[in-house]
Image (cartoon, rainbow, N blue to C red; front, side, top):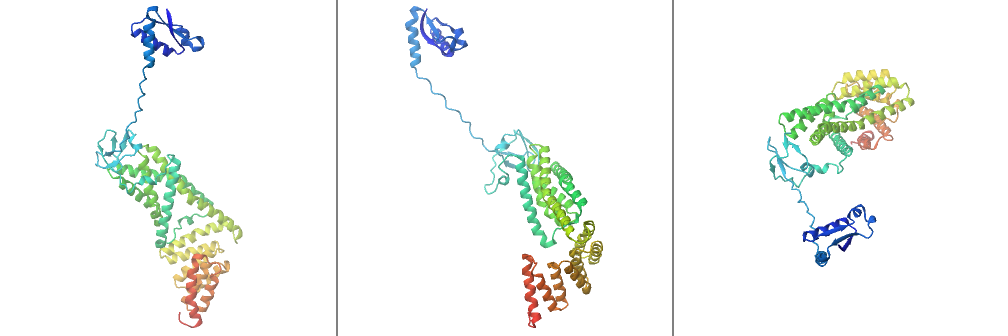
Length: 431
C-alpha cells in the first residue's frame, strides 16, 4: 500500500477515504484508531493509502476535489415579520388589534364582553386608531412594582384634582379629622392599609365578574363597579365617594388588564395599588396625631381631654354645613366644657351663635378665642364681620387690622377688601 496523503483531522481523513471508495478505489486509513483519540497520538498524521496501480488516479481525484470551489454558505433565513392582525369576538362581534405580547398567547379574552377566545378564532384586520393609544400611559418596564407605583401616581393626581373640583362646592373634605387619639388613628390606619384594600378589591372583582357573566362590555364593567364602590366609600361623607371615583375605575381596568395573565395576579396587583394609595393619607393622619401630641405639651390642659373634645368640634362642622345650627352649638359647648383651651372651639361656637342671631354671645366667644391666641386670623375676621353687621365700623376696622400680621398669603386679598370697605365708613365718606 502506498501513502498518498496524511491527515490530522479524523473528519477530513474519513471524507477523503469515502471519496476514493465511491470512485471504485480501495483506500485504507492507517492509524485511524489512534487519530480518533486525538492528534497528539499520531503526530505524523493518519495515512491514506491505496494500491500501487491506483496511486495516480487517486491523487488526481483528490486534487480535483481540493481545487473545486466550495459552495457559498446559504444566506440566513430571516423569518417574515409578524403581521399584527386583530381578533373578532364570536360572542359580541367586537374587533381589536393585537400587541406582540398578545400574539404569543395561547388564548385571549374579549375586552368588551370577556368571552374566552381560542387562538384559532377568526382573524379580522383591525387598525388601532393612530390618534390615541391608551397603552402609552403604561410604564415601559415589565416589572410589576413599577406598574403599581405608576398607577398609584396616576390615581393620586386624579383624586387630588377631584378634590379641587368638589371642595368649592361642598366645603373641605375633613373626614379624616374625626380620627383623634392614637386608638382611633391606629385603628383607621390598620383598616385602610390592610382590611379595606382586601374587601373592597374583592367586592370590585365580584361585581366585574358578575357583569362579565351577564355579557356587559368592558367599560360598563369598570364603570358600574367603580360607582358601587364609590357609594360604599362615600356613605359617611359623599364628596369622598366622588373624589375616589377615578381611583376605582382605574382599579377596574387594571384588574381587566391583568386578568388574562392570571386572576390571582390581577387581584394581588389591585390590592397592592389600593394599599400603597391608602398609605399616603395614613401617613398624614399619623403625622397629624404626632403634631397634636407635641402641641398639647405646650398647651394648657392635657392631651387626653383634648382628644375627647375634638370629635365634638368635628361633628359641629358637619352640623353647620347641614344647617343644623342648634346641634352645632350643643356640640361646641360640649367640646369647650371638656377642653376650654382650644381657640378653634370658641371661634366655631361664635360662628354658630352668629348664625343663630345671638350676636352678644358670639362677640364674647370671638374675644375668648383671641385671648387664647392673639394671632388667630379666623377669629379676628369673624369678629370683623360681626361688628360690621352691628354697624360698629371703627371697632370692625381695628379688628381687621389686627388680622393682617399673622394672615396667610391666601387670606390677605380678602382682608384688603375689608379694609377698603371699612376705611371710608370710619372716615365718614361713602365707600
